[in-house]
Length: 457
Image: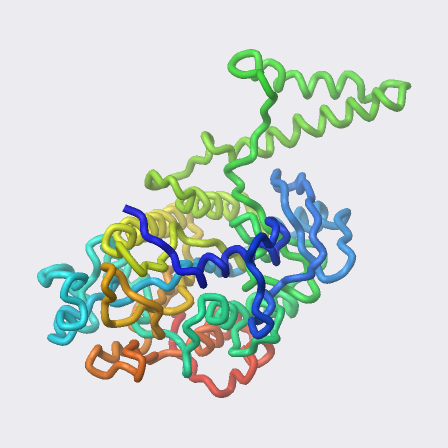
């Protein structure tokens, strides 16, 4: 059973796609009080990165010198830089279902229909909390010390608008005028002009969190979707045609006719590109770990990240969206269960893949959503917009502990929402300093105001 998103969520998605230049604005209009999406107005050009075998949409604040990129990526390939993978769960995931406070009597008063039954897998660090059955892969990782859990993360004076709250998380500040992402500002300080893979969005559009002001970043729909095809040709005939590209190109490379030389060069380049694409083809993307079947493509994008890192591509900050949406105003049990399972299964497979490839110490995965849900259920078997939500940090180098306490449903705020016990800007500051070794004050406005939770070991 599907659920219906609120108008705020639907309008937010349309406006953000329009800002990225990938869809017309349609009927949605932006309230002038709303912030501009980070990254709006950046130069945007498509570029075939031969050294990586993928088609990128490259974003930059100034004139893009695409001729530098192949050489720059090739020179940076094989680097062992630390990588942060940023996973966004759109819509506001219900933290009180992912970690349900079954040990608090008021929980069942607030949620007579939606409350999880007791007797499930307990959260080891707070006996009041119990993992959702679909989140058991996350419970496994937490038990192994590879998943830090933020049971009530948010910010003071929370904004319950999808657009505004998401913007604050993306830019790393409660500032509607900021137009660069928090990871983008980090890349502006440490990145280069010739490596757009340093900031990579795997959702087709530019992820605002990696929007920069100085250095290029890129977006790709998914590396596993690129392949060669021809209308009306398939099977053995198609294979014979594609296999002929190299010989056709080489046969005309020395032609005295300029047009024939150009055609030969194009055919030869196509043959080389096909060979480079082979490891990332949707039916060829293999590795040491089997990923779950996933119609959303989430697991496939995670698998592609692992394959790209194993191939030595110079990634630093990677952003992608999680499966489905979490704006569960109605029919929450069905859609939430499915989305949590797809997310959790994919994340566990990704962690196991990184471990099997010997890459796990280089990668941290941050999972976030723009807010949590209201503690009290509504009349449609759903929950409305809330305040503090849940977040995760996954990896062998993650501290693997609880960050901030669970405040309890007995001490809700004046709107009936969970109070935040950790601030997302504090988490960003710790990631910048403890993971990347970079001064948070140079990236996060007023970083000195926030503590530094221990996130990395």
